Amino acid sequence: MADLSDIVAFCDQLLDVTMFDDYCPNGLQVEGRREVQSIVTGVTASQALIDAAVDAGADLVLVHHGYFWRGEAAPLVGMKGRRIRALMGAGISLLAYHLPLDAHPELGNNRQLGLRLGLPDATAVDGLMWGGEFPRVLSPKHLSALVGDTLGRVPLMVGPEHPVKRIAWCSGAAQSMIEQAAAGGFDAFISGEISEHTVHQARELGVLYLAAGHHATERFGVQALGDKLGTRFGLQHRFVDIQNPV
Image (tube, rainbow, N blue to C red):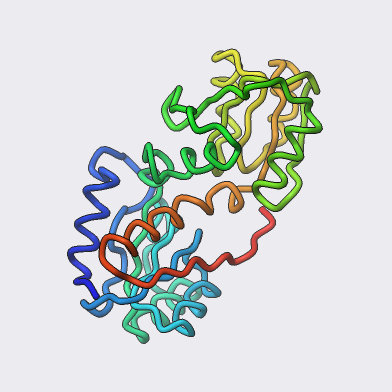
């Protein structure tokens, strides 16, 4: 069992949250009971995740996508009000880390995705974009299969279907970074989402693009951080994967 303030302080320092100008507050967003024994992690603080945390008797929910986004209406009414009431009614705290959890060199979404793709030597090459090189050339079909097997869903692949050796990626909605990938000389670029113009960019820039799912590419950071907290503070940790096709 651990004190909530110790967990928050540890995460804030570990993820270096003060270094990020983010779209939302990072850290403790909803304060519940002070003593924490059980953590539920998930990608987004949806009602389904909160309900699962309540059913599991969790003291803390840790997510990548929390609340209070820039430009979002502030009143706690409607859907947001129901979510907050559910957390506070159960005494559950909500801890959320957005860009800090994308960027972390060990626990971050991009680092963890690279490890699962078999690229342990990958590094950040341009801001949040990471890159690596396979030991052998892959065909587009084999790359698609590797990404699909890793994430449990078949990616949407567009652009020139040429052999791939150097690959870049950025989790979530980073399709606009395809120009950075092209400038870096990468053969392929992976992100979560795709826009209409991404198809034309991929074709004209000569970069194979794989839209692998926003949710799917951002499942690993919270799991790694949850495991870290479990070991550090002697807590029970359970990851709940609320399916999302986007």
